[in-house]
Length: 284
Image (cartoon, rainbow, N blue to C red):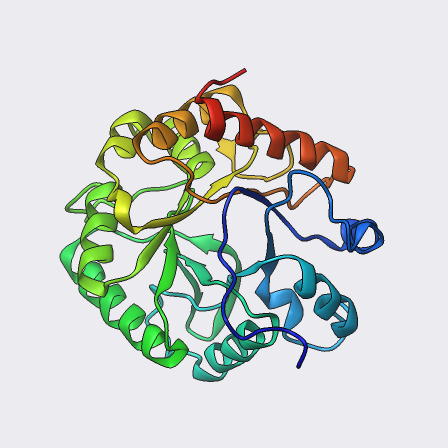
C-alpha cells in the first residue's frame, strides 16, 4: 500500500467498529467521509485469511480513516505456547493498514489444544499476574510496540483470586508496561453479575495508561447479563463513561456493536452521544 504514509495517524474523538454490513456505505461516502466517525477499528482476526474483506476495499478505507486493530487470538493468559506466527501476521496487518495500535483481551481462549469461542476469565492472583506479565512482554517484543490490554466481562469468579480485578489490572499495566483499553460495558456487566463496584473501579484506573474506551450494549438473561454487543449503550454505562471522561477528557472512544448489527445511522447516533459527553460531560 505505497500510497499510505507509514507515520501512524493519531486516533481521536469517537470511532466505530468496521463491520461488513457497512463497508459499501462507508466507501461510497469517501472521500467526503461520514460525520461523527473519527476512526475505525478492525477485528483483526477477520482479515488474516482468504475470504475476508477485499484488500482493495481495506486499502481504500485505510486511505481516509485512521485505523486500529482489535484481536481475539493472542490468548494472553493461556499456558499454551504462544502462537508467534499469529502475532507476526497481526504485525503485518498493522503495517499494511498503518494501524495506530493493537489491542487484545485479558483472558485466555485456548487450553489443551482446544480453542474456545469465548473470552475465558482468569483468577486474580500473583501466579497468574506473573504469567500474564511475561507473556505480554514477549508479545510486545514480537510486535515492536506496546499492546493495549482490555478488561473482559465474565460469568464466574475463582476462589483462589487474591486481589480485585482492578488491582490486578493496575499491577499488570505497571509490570508489563502495557497500555489499557477500558471497556465500560464490561465493567457494568461485571457489576451486575458479580457485585463489582463500577464507580470505584473507574476511580482506581491508571488514567495515563488508558488509550481507548469501548462502549457497547448488553443483553439480559434469566439470572445474569450477557456482554452481547447487540443493543444500544445503556444509561448506567453512559454514566460510568461520563465519570471516566470527567477524569481525563478526550480519550478515544469506540462504539462496539457485533451482533444484530443495525443500520449505520444507528451507530452514528450512538457515536454522537459519546461525542456530546466528551464535549459537554452530560448524559442525555
